Image 1 (cartoon, rainbow, N blue to C red):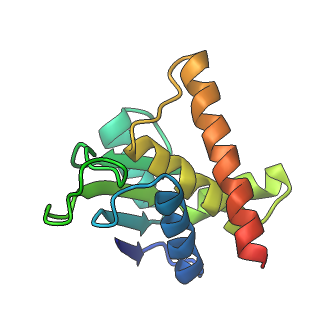
Image 2: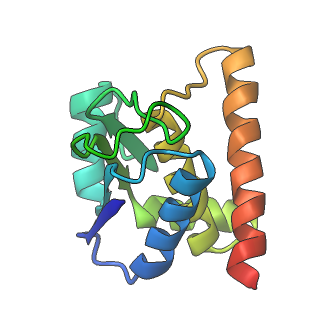
Length: 155
């Protein structure tokens, strides 16, 4: 599993811990170990530009997900050890927005970034929250993953 993290935000972020979280999420969801994931941490100006360009919405947002390939080869499917790596996509995070949200939510910026990263990965895997049923499924899975991560990360 290849996880590339680029911190272009100017904010000090524990990228090794963020990578461990992403690996935990992908492993837990039984995503093929040949998958490639890119995580970019950007500043407010870059996130604003992406948000306007791709979502046609003003201002910065906290997370954007850009799926690349259709994920069709989970570990429990046919043995695909000879299959080429699947480029899952890009998750883009904005630590400055995450910091503001964390303060309002009463937890750390790292916890908010972990929540947002998990949320972005779920989007890459096809989860969405366009209607109530989808939202319940996605946020339930997100909560389950973050609870599991918190237990593992602590000890």
